[in-house]
Image 1 (cartoon, rainbow, N blue to C red):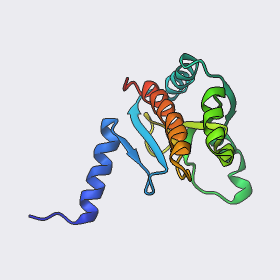
Image 2 (cartoon, one colour):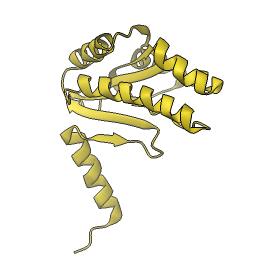
Image 3 (cartoon, rainbow, N blue to C red):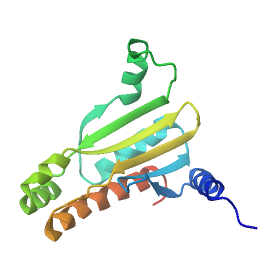
Image 4 (tube, rainbow, N blue to C red):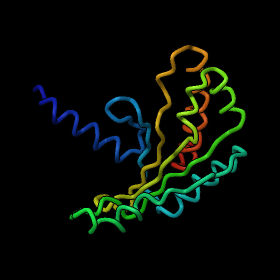
Length: 162
């Protein structure tokens, strides 16, 4: 029996969401992990992962709070997130390598990682980051890959995968 393509995709997504498997958005621009935990623990663990790498959070964007606060102003009828934040950080050594390889790489700084819990799936936490790609030379991509690697290590630590 051959399963319809949409059913296969739906089953793969369900499997990924239930197993903590990593997945990427359609154009390989986002890497994320879904797991069961409390949001507060996941946020704390992501902050600790940053600290464990010797990094500091520059800013915390309270994205879920902003959406909830402005919902009436924009006529929203859906609450997407129970909680959700974006953590911004920088690394002097990684940033220098990236920007020496290509000054345009400043566009990627500060680097960001996110953590959220949706209203649709309470108790399921998603952590991830935007994959830095599109460098115009191999040296630049190598520098961006180093940033991607450290972000992946941190979100995996927060997800309890390392």
